Length: 338
Image: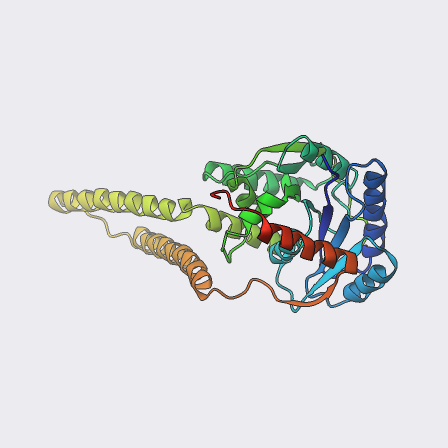
């Protein structure tokens, strides 16, 4: 087996504080893997600047000029973590045999990448990085994260417990992922749908090396809700079931009121009336909001706007040569039917 070309894709948003250490550690990983002859010497890292407002892109250009491992993409605007990650994956698949995605904050263990590559060489197309535990999280974050994974599983979404976006994917899995034309991206749910041979590597998650988290509680909740509504219609079915239950209760209440009227034991109760109005009104607004969320997703899908726009690239000549050579081989390869 020839040594595969590995690309490490790193989405970056306002990461000027941690980026020098990220490049240093990932360069060490690539150096070590090349020395062990586990990967090709043409392997690189691809830093994707997701419309940062700080010096992230100038730093990427600076590292690119002095470090042969470093390549970069700059998106024209802040497209969001999932789209920036997808931009890097789609770019890397044109010249890499396998791609590892990892966040720039160094919370994921970079040493686990070696095990990813070993598993890839054993024949696995997808290798998931799984956290051993959440001992470093606060009680609130641990409880909400575990609740999210359990909720997604109960709703029928195939998602790996304690897995974020730290994974290895082979070129053929990325080629298939490119066929997913979804605007509402939730890669943690999309990748398992590919169905290729996969395995897991467990690691201990670290504290953020520097800078601030780009996922405060508000963004985390929005991300979780987006994942749920992108992969399951269970919330809509729940609203339907709740409508049936309330309808049944209203029929029972109506029968009770008629019987009370006939028996002459009716009692005027403003409290129960007001509570009923507020309850039904609240449920209706909840249902409309949930339906509106799904309609909004359909609206985004049908517009077919590009997921991201690449403004600049910092790609070495050797990488571009490998890319053009790879594309030439792909075009000249005989079809399976010939």
